[in-house]
Image 1 (tube, rainbow, N blue to C red):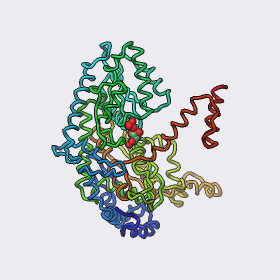
Image 2: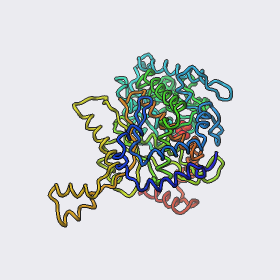
Image 3: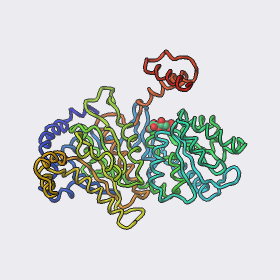
Image 4: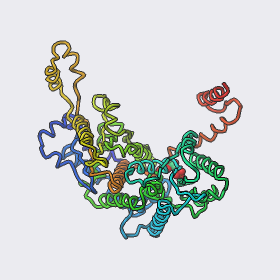
Length: 548
Ligand code: G6Q
């Protein structure tokens, strides 16, 4: 592992960027009718068109060299084979074992983890089938109609995103709710919507020490016992997902109602584990396992495809190209797929918590930019909101467009309208509109003279703005699994190139530590003086406002 900026390929890319700065993508397309063919690839039912990036064959070659310089193939194998690559936490990184659909063993410290993985999957199947069939009943004998997942971060974003993405596969009569925020409004609003006799609470927490989750779970537990009048009701209405049996029992959930996962599964990589229980309840275990199969297929592709034909690798390298050589601060995710409305938020955690690091494995400061700011919203909505900046603003915003060829709800030609908008946006970003083109348009619209001169600069689009398009047949469980795994591996590859640990998250600790001291100062009546003046001021103003 070493400083990537010292790799020969990095230096060559720096030089090459100077040449590329003079080149417009629209000319690259005009010169080469085969550009799409050269710069697109298909894997696991997903077509990646990366032709609308500021690249030539030389760029791609140099980027592949960069991957080789960083010894990427060795790093990939180290992850899959269970080495403790999360070195700051001393853990293996094996979310891929959770979706290992082969008969091959996966070892952590010489122990094959597959029997325990499969055992939990079996338990999830028995439980979800019992709930879905009505065999599992609430305390008063009624069928479960509502599932409330209580968890935060990795124990929430995956379940929310996947449950929403797979809405067409939900069982009729079952409803899902998600409570993550410690803001009491969320749990209280949720409890107001559900019936205690027919509600199942899933408390999802890897550590089972997360205050937000435990506070919400306690509120839910008290509410349930209060409404049903018996502590014994908890056993029919609460299950836990955790790595921490002792804490689950201390909370008052019987270990028989606990679904286990392991420390080698990072929170933001845990949707493949029992953390996906809410998904499995809503869509059934068959669909959940199909999602695992899609993820596994992407793993196989990632592990075996040559670097230049490897989808996660190509996406990662393009990201590095924009991020480190073109100074793009952010990367936008535009799903032209309403079912993927929470995908940008999900990727925000996956990418920013994984690669928002500024020291290398050896503890030295990095010499390059690391993870970009991830953001986005579904199209077409974004077009009517912030796309202005993406087209004509001063910043470079590389983007991923995601779209299904086929709608889950064919209605007249409405899906074609969605597709047309998606393809038109990436085309517009790539081509832009020159001064001459804009002038011709204005003249055709009858605008001439001083008015034309005034309007002209505003009608020009610089173009040459990079994007990838990911096209798949339909957003089914298999494709969704493949998409999630694709982005997981993209993030991993970038972490390898930057020589950072993509699997820890120390940056979330400081705020947590400070919150404890602030919380106690807010509860008592006394004037606060022990913090900085801003924190004191805010805390005291809060007390004053409450009394007014
Ligand atoms: C994810 C992070 C973080 C974590 C939450 C919830 O990778 O570690 O988002 O998922 O802080 O933690 P628990 O699942 O332990 O409650």
